[in-house]
Length: 332
Image (cartoon, rainbow, N blue to C red; front, side):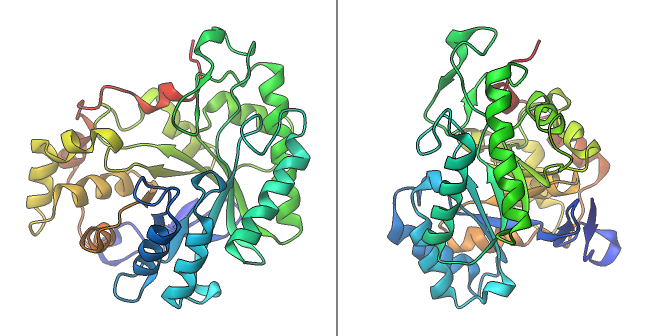
């Protein structure tokens, strides 16, 4: 992995070269925020604006689970962005959830992916992710903790158990075939902890290009539980969702460290400072907002560089009570 198209002063570039040689924009638009989910019209408006020449996002992240890919399609059309100039990213449901049935992981993943292509009305996408590992009863160390919450990802999956490991291997085999068929340019995962990545490695030589994770300042560390460095060492690009802090964004953005870092660089906002922090750690991100001013702000993070102290101060913020890595897998 290497950053590409670097700007002056050797700063973070606007795109990244993935482990299969494909280039991906460093910052893409996330179409799965609460302002768009189950809202096709809202999605159309937001995506069209994000991809417009006046704003300038070059990629969009969607998913079957967001129930709004028709809106993504219509937003792309309304923006006038040529398909060849757009990074289009989607996801398939984890096996055992919704349309991908337990016992049919491989074939249902194929069907779910084809449904994505139909909804988006494209011949191919640039990236396809498995949205999360499965949450399988009787396959966790404490089965009562294996549950589906309001979010897509499971709490406390155990990919060291045979059942969930077999399920994600079946899904991964389907994604590998999509690459060979020219239906997706790269494949990856989302919300996968090391145990789930090790499960894939045991059955395939294809390393995920991306692991999309909930990651942001405020959890008291730049590398919670060593999860991010684990991905980086394996050549997997981390793509942060909820990069401003998710439900804890208010606490993150009002922190003295974020405010001071932004102010020190041409009166940047605290939001720009914490986004820059994610990028400067070597990661990428998906930013979700329906506010056009915020869209422009989210993209205006490439021409300044946080100091070593500013990076450390933001990294030390401990204002988000929930470590996002705890939401994925059991740790012992």
